Image: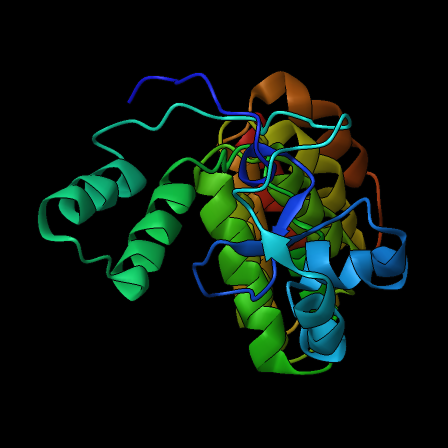
Length: 257
């Protein structure tokens, strides 16, 4: 739909604001009116007019009024005929009916399709990771993992940081939880970042029947890492008396000794 030259009336001014939100009409108010100063944030951000509706009713005027010298032509954006808004307006021109509920749903879907998931902020999901509510924590993890799959580096960084903050597991529940997180973070382009923390896990985790699966998974992970990234760190472990003969045998196997 092409851009048309706008008539110099209040309805086409940036300062013109509907007198009754949610209802189409010719009446509005001027945002430069000083009597509205205490309510500007409410009008522009929350879009609620309950507390000042009486005032709006008192000072409203027709948008067809000739604009004053402070007229600011409203900024128009071209509407794609195939967009939800464009299709809705086409239907409106044909039928004279506008389904606001369907339009809002279509526009919401369109907004989601155009969101850049690679750069969308992840603060709310990162905060959920440290929630005392396991369900909220798991939702945070799920959302971050979803964003990671779309290439959101900040989502990966937050989950990686959370993973490193977790203490070594001592129960089966903790073992399974760390296994799940490692599975989410285990990507070829991220392995080098995970190696130091997992080596530290081998030093800190008490080896027993409960933690055997976790330790085995760490060795499995390290075995698939580039040799030059792990040989020195694993080689240092061979001189440590704290590690059993069995664990040292697994290290030697990875190092090809």
